[in-house]
Image (cartoon, rainbow, N blue to C red; front, side, top):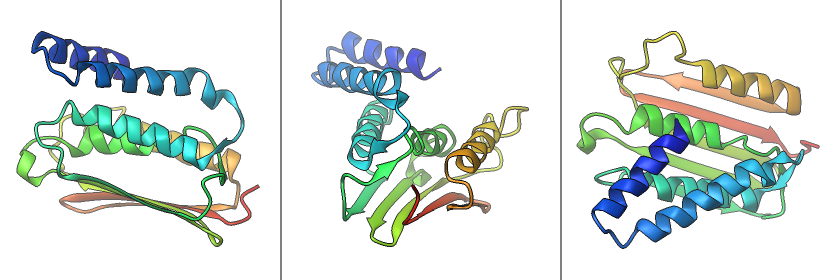
Length: 181
């Protein structure tokens, strides 16, 4: 779905002869290169995952009418901190899939990423509505279940994952212990 949606975004930009078309192509290319080649290792540097997230977020902004409600804040002590590849992207994808919908004035995605000597913390929140399209089908929640299973495999007893849903907000907090290796 991501690839087809991405190609449709690029097509729409090209039809409108937007200057951003070439930027979108480069960002998509970087995302695909990372997913296909770079993420095949067991661990990657945090700065590589951050670059992936930045490219993904910037690419998704082409699909949004108003991207000012999307924030990505980082506080990183060590860019070379080692992390499991593709750990964070599914959480960000989920927020775009379920958060940026409906009334654009009320949509938001806020991402905070912290890495200190004490460990790693990733927090993401987005708007939520019980009536969101796709939230009531048989596959709803499958991505989060896959993330939980992956965490149990790659960070057994060395992580905390908290998922919270209210009437209007969905949040995920992921904490990795400092000695995650």
